Image (cartoon, rainbow, N blue to C red):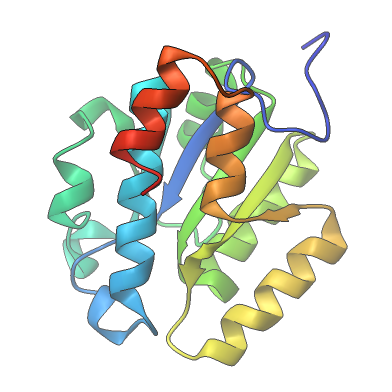
Length: 187
């Protein structure tokens, strides 16, 4: 996509992808409440700014469906089922991502060292720019999540925080949009 920025996240060129934020998996995840809160926050800001959001579910028959707070924000057509750990290796998932024609993918979810890592590596190999939201990913063991973030940074993903994403999507202060996001989400 011509003119798409490489370093800054653009709301016109990005999408939010939340990976495996599933109810049965979450009790085992380190700081799961924080991850859920940050993923839901990102999805709300994305919706407010018109950034498309997709979510993946790993084998929902066994692991259940998305956390209800995230599920409430998404339509059924925004949730992609997968059996590969790396969602980019599921042809229907990668096709859905690329059909949106958004060269930037903002990634959050669990488990950082398994499904998030394999999905991000697949997205990078597909030529997409990936922004990994470090405060919106985790694993059962914190050291696995830390290793995943380091590995993905080394592989070419840009590591960001949820507020970095929001402020780059917003771009400037002094607008009604900024005031609304600041009032509703940044306090």
